Length: 99
Image 1 (tube, one colour):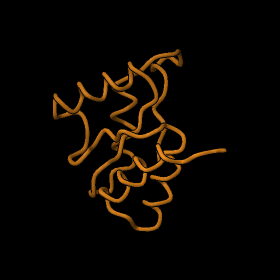
Image 2 (cartoon, one colour):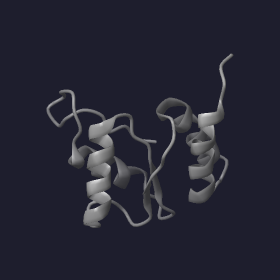
Image 3 (cartoon, one colour):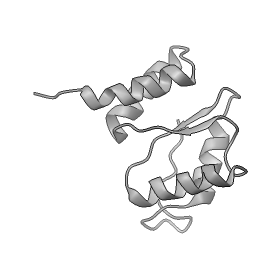
Image 4 (tube, rainbow, N blue to C red):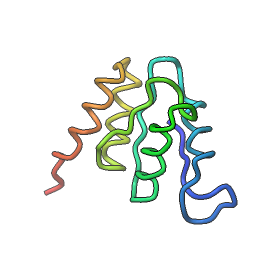
């Protein structure tokens, strides 16, 4: 897992360079699941995926809740799950109830 929040100068926002660097740092060749929090991150990752040359092959934008989805994704990946299993676990986190 790698974080890529904020701008390259430490401010609020989104940086394609930070996202690309984080994705490359965790890429083991089986694909990268990207979870995002808010609108600018969603738009940035979608644009990067459309460009096709900034992110590792097999990178996916995962539709999942940010915190719960990240926990589920990391647990699944650390247990040896493939990218499909990681994506499914993260998406299933939408159903986690707290009360």
